[in-house]
Length: 484
Image: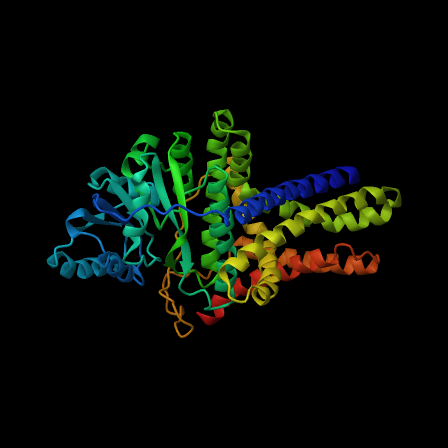
């Protein structure tokens, strides 16, 4: 039995090591690509018809802000169609109707497509709008984003290449400095929107439309088979179908679209659950098709780590759970000491991930050294603390267990003076995950004590990160109950 545990521990560490190597490769590609001069297409002279889709569901705090931003687009009104895809069941619908009346009088082609049911959730709403859309291109914005007036002028020129199917822009963050939670989210998202998206594009690998702040060629959606409802990440799923059809995706790192980050842990968890489970669902559906395609092996390898990147939480959770009995096994079997010493090679994975986030921090922060030292350890800690929640979400996705699309509540919080306390969408009830996270916090505190007792300090830092990480997540999960 002890040997089985050691083998399981080694496999989980090996998977994490491979994942870290893929991130290292992306980092190196990113660094190299920054020295290349990007070709910027000429400005628009002919203005194609564009449909702007705004999928909303009970967004009373932010929907008017979104509508105002889109109405300010610097684009010919006769070429612009705005669809508000409204599945709301509260006063959001009346707020929308009131907001669009003066815009219609100004000559803006804006309409509300209201569904009485949420069949297919966001994907169903997008598909409903797609069926009646008139634009050659379709721009999509979630309710928590504020697209700038020149968004279409900056993105549409890249469709001069007829094989370009999607142009995706980088997410910026209007409330990054609101709290520690928003700072940590921005820290992680910036790495995805700099290194991962940019480097995958440069290496010719698949990237993804991120669900918002991007433009589709309408013909691309049709050719790929339209929006489907069988995953929680309809954006990633359609992205893979389109790229398997040889459509080209373009990511623009230097074009940003500001958005609002969730400010309470329950909202972060619902978003993380959907992203991680949906990614696993897409991997289960499409990886075999990628493997059978005529894409290069480099592309296939990157696609594996792209599609299965959320599975890192399963590997992390398994390695964490087994690390405590490893202390006892190591103590009980001194003859196995060389085996455990050989495992230290996996520390290279930690340095690879550290390098990955360091390069991203250098790209976006004016004081990268200070920011990195302050945020990176806390980011690692919280990522570990979310491994139970996210790992089980991934497992559900891989096993094909279906659940509803749970929206992330929006807040309309942009400054430190804004408050979420009156937000009616925030759910404060405790789920079984909370109790599991509390138990794991105690479990890894025991691991720290066991290491001290056995005079084995090798895993002390790891167990400390885990204990504080699960404790951090528990604290911020409880916080809205007492401050709401």
